[in-house]
Image (cartoon, rainbow, N blue to C red; front, side, top):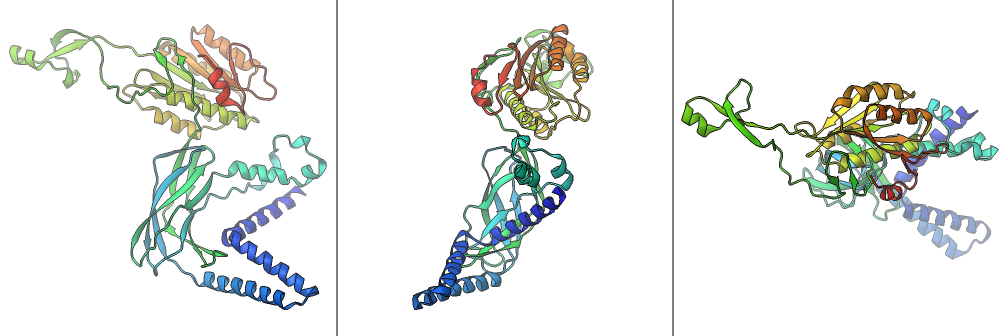
Length: 441
């Protein structure tokens, strides 16, 4: 029976989207007024009512004919930034070329990918708290449909802010504003030009010729309080580290003859000129602290808490200065994932991109995660662990880190059935920022 409801919801959602994109709020108002006046005429055939109905009907007719007659032939190219952030408004510029007549009173709309779920997803998913709803709601499952639609909506907005008049064969630049709702990669392949009538009752939505683009949305990030990592300096949120210089900071120790493979920048040119053979400078090796950021992806059934765990991990990536330390992001997905950022390697943006696409693992495997960390334990100074919920297997995982001699900093997103011990800082899923500011790392 619910499959029948699914097809009904799917069809009505598509019809609602089509109608509401073409009928503007003023259009709904004038159509409602026309229906009311026509209804009143049935019982009270007064001349003012005839006049009001004729005026409203005439305005609607003119607006519909005007809207149908409008045409536009546009091509567009998006100038997207390399990244966006979930929950933060993004503005980008679209270069538009007009291949038709002069355009005035128009706009652009970026359409989000279709958020309607598939039939298997609708039948197998359960809205949080669905078992507490009454029998009527559980039978029709409309709240589940709305919840799945909300989860799959990748961004809101997408309308142009202002649009100048665009002459034939002229280029113009239009700014579009949208707000990504979740991390990941957004496919942008449906741009429309909106052509309203002079009264702004109705509008036509014509397709714009544009090549598909992808926008990478990074996870939402939180502010962190001042915290200390073992074997490193203190880190404070908001410190300016952009001016620090890269390079070998080891102290000079001696001069020696050149050996194959020595970097040219270490040649001591004055000594080479004096002795007639290549001489290089020797410097002492500098060892940088190396940390593992371990993300718990074993969160099947707790996807909301998992998203908060990803955001907390992204907050650490954004705050830790990879000019001074090396940071390994470790998690288990379809296979083992170890992504490193630090001096001479990738920057922290690579870790954030990896977090933007990480998903929930289908089965729990803390033994495999422990083996992964054990293979790298000789290079690590400490581990930062971000858990989704709490269980005995997670407690055993921390005991394994202790046995390896690794200091760990642990945070966990609370789930309904979790009882988090004192050594792990608990974060409520709906109060993560507040609870993070109470943490003292």
